[in-house]
Length: 256
Image (cartoon, rainbow, N blue to C red; front, side, top):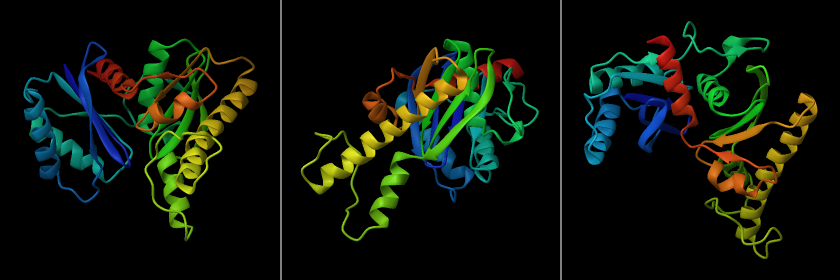
């Protein structure tokens, strides 16, 4: 069993993975760019103790982080917590994925990990939707190559900008709207952000299909907002909360 950690801009997701499958639940803690390695150790250790996970039982550890200043902090935290040196996904790490874009070195490590898992687990071509602080759509084509994608603001980011930039619109939680044609301000905001984001995804998926010259054989979504937004899409989307962790496990297995 290994410890897999995905450090994002808003949350750090982590879990236990064995033979490519998540063991138990996926944990999330808030990303704090000012927290020290000891503070992250305390948080992770507390969760492990609460869930009865032996922190010294891991065979290995792997880390993906899209917040560069946090990478060494989390690396030290994993080392102190488990006694292991984590594999950090980045330049020089073998992934088994051919990245066929202009500058392969610019692809974020979380997108690489998700694409590695999608290539292994889902029919190709596959579109991967990752709904975090930003929403990304990436494509692994029928030959198993990472060929690029699109990035748009995440649902929470868009909603926050809407509330901050207007005098009369309140700050609200994103929840399923009761109707697409809403009868009050709060429900109108819910309808706009949920149906608007789902509509943007549908529109991009249609254009991806045109660009590929064929419909995607699979569309898979991951990330904190995917379970709320994707059920409102008109395309068939498979939800996979542990896609990134499975990709990290595959990368760790290839490099151990």
